[in-house]
Amino acid sequence: MSALIDPADLTHEIELVWLEEINDLDYVRQHRDRVTGRNRKPAFHRDGRLVGYAVLGANAKASRASGTHLRRVFWLAPHDRDSQPDGIYATGAPSEAVDPRTIAPGAKGYKTERSEGGPASDAMREMGITLPKA
Image (cartoon, rainbow, N blue to C red; front, side):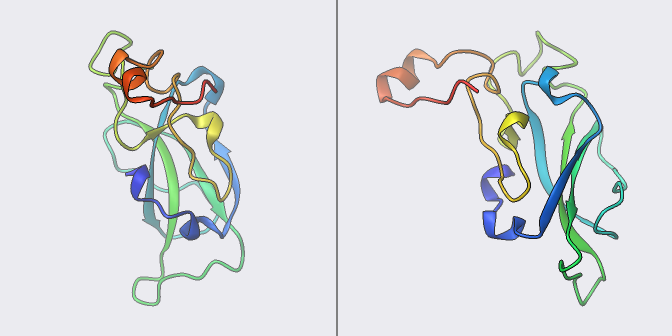
């Protein structure tokens, strides 16, 4: 989940590679996956499609036990809003979803009104919770 990503774990990121145009996407899911390399396109084994991934610098150390690196991958499931605009995420978004325009190397990104599918709800406004417009 994106909420569980510690920005300190992203310090070795030097670049993000987008495989799709992110300006057309309200949100992407982000996870840290254990992969074999620092910079090539990672293998992807989820039901959905890989949208992008982080590239790690040469100083990023591999795990001693497995020889793998933890890198962020950005992806979408078949039932996400871009494929099913009237589906389960017509409003709201998965917990690991963030607005791709808020992501940068070393920055985990955050939810916005756009990633959540529209303006804040009445309940959010009553509680004084606001999300950036991005």
